[in-house]
Length: 358
Ligand SMILES: *Cc1c(COP(=O)(O)O)cnc(C)c1O
Image (cartoon, rainbow, N blue to C red; front, side, top):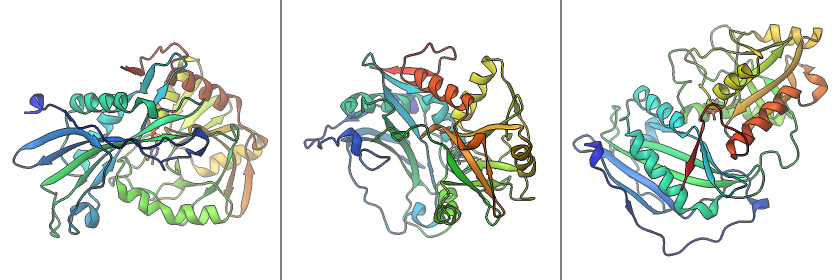
């Protein structure tokens, strides 16, 4: 059934003006077109199409609006110096989304077809990919349940769609470290729950802690495990790494941590540089003690939006713990430079992570 789907194309008649690169920010502007495909329980996926960027009509009773049946992804298209367009590990994003679909009782989608639609959409709107250093086109695949029905059960109707937003460089003001608030009051996810899925409710549930940290002057929240509130899990919507002596340590994926593609890329790159990497449980006490005795050399968070985000301070139980004197560490910088070089097609790509478009 999947093999026979064609993607139809209906170009917009009213292209939008493109914002200047300095005004981009993150996720505020959207390109001229979107991809959409519908699913129902009788017919499966159908009506794959690229059309003008437009609002949905949705029943007020729609499943997603009440029970949060929603999953999404985030990945980027980059414009290389040579004019080429590159995607970074797009299949990993789509496969992660399909695993999330299973967890959320949503239909899996044909990865090949979505990738074909994604590439066609990026190519069609290629003039929206900013050329400035560090800027890119952020892609947001999304799937929502849309039954007009208030009974709680998996929906019989879904919309898969893909929208795209030109985004500016995360580091317009330099590769500057963040200050992170260690959160004791709230947790992000529990093992057996949905922490490893990019599902909408996880992010709604994180906002209050984020707001509190922000008001106190911190950029983000460091999440501890839900059971013992001892083990480090993530920072905001990023994975976290610590350089402890000469070993790069990150918490293991165990159901409550989102398996970041940047996290996986960092582990593989660091190992290829002969840096010792351990995926092991790490307590906040171990990290704070290491900050005091000098064995915590540096720390950084990883995710698609910022790629690498150095951590300059942890704030826990009314005490601030500086890391690397509040400055970005050498490994964070090296990883950032190398990942960006691969993403923009400037560097060799030993792991075959990039995919060309057009
Ligand atoms: C998306 C996300 C990440 C980072 O994943 P990447 O694939 O590296 O972008 C980490 N943690 C959470 C909670 C996320 O939602």
